[in-house]
Length: 206
Image 1 (cartoon, one colour):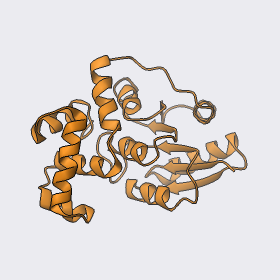
Image 2 (cartoon, one colour):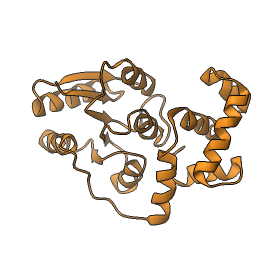
Image 3 (cartoon, one colour):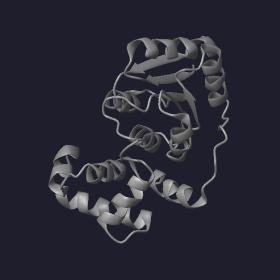
C-alpha cells in the first residue's frame, strides 16, 4: 500500500491535498500533519517509510527551507513534493536544492496538483536552473545527519551550545562534536562561516 504524508498547517488545503493523493492512489494510506514537529513525529512513528511527502514550506516549526532539509535528512530516499504559496521563481530551485523533487504552487488547479503527485511517485524530478556553486553547498548541507542539521538550525537561530544541547536532549560536548563535523562537511573554518553558508542558501529565511 502506498503511504503518503501530507504536511500543511491549513486544514482545508491539507484536506484538498489528501483528496488529490487519494485520487491518484485510491488505496493510499494518507497521514496528515499540521506542524513540522508532527510531520517529523509521523516519520518516526511510521511502520514503514513513506512513498511520498507533500509539504508546505510555511508551517509552524519551519523556517525558510528547514522543513524540506529536515524531512530529507530523515528520509533521504523519499520524494518530497513542495506545495506552497511561496513565489515559485524564488522558492522552487531552493526547495529542490534541499532535497525536494519538485515544487508546485497552491494556486494550481486540482488536476495539475494530481499530475505533480503522479510524477513524484513515479520518480520524476522537475527541471530547475543549475547553479554549480550554490548546488555544491546545498548538497553539502543535504549530507548532514538529522541531528547535525538541527544543531546548525539552532546556531542559525542564535542559540548557544548549551541551549542547543538542552533543546535536543544531548550534552554540550556532543553539540561541539556535531559542530566540528558540520564545519568539516561544509568545508568551512568556523561557526560564522557555517552560518553564512547556510543563510546564503536561504536555509534560515525566505
